[in-house]
Length: 223
Image (cartoon, rainbow, N blue to C red; front, side, top):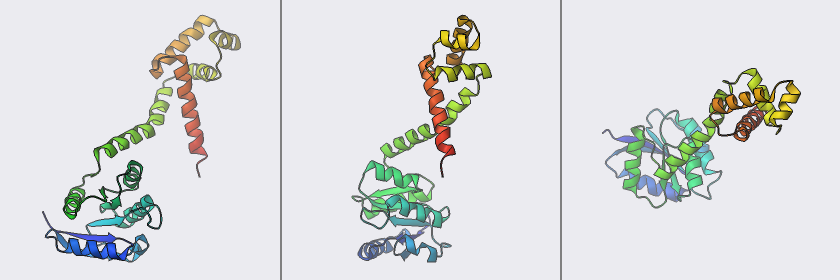
């Protein structure tokens, strides 16, 4: 595999110089550029840079995920590796969500780092398995409203109207009286709603509609 070039985006000079020296002596590293934190990214020529290493340790100016996000935007597709995380799941997840292709914790070695850089350059996402699981759960949470909107679209206009009345906790008898229909007809509609939405009860169906409506309301009011 070809040697690679790095950009070290590290605000603390002693840390930056120490890592630069350690990596410069490694056979896999072609050359290293440095900048003192994400504020210096705009002055970097990225043409020959293969990978960006950004310091996200606690105590640095700005949140770690903000540093990763800034580096990710500047790198234009080059992998960004978050350095110095302490193994906290929330911080690891935030860095990956901000664009980090890999996370290097505080107890990993230079050899670990080089192996991780290699994997990131191959297009791999390098993070602890538990973070991969958390990302999967996050994607499922994000996709759930879309899936539920799709299921709700299978309802007829009459079924959607009756479902909206179910969210008001109306009984079949109340709905039938309000719509001028037989109770048996309402029962059939409720049964069809439950089947189409693939839920277990009228309560679960009503909760689905509430959740989707609330989610769409939050989206519509987002800045």
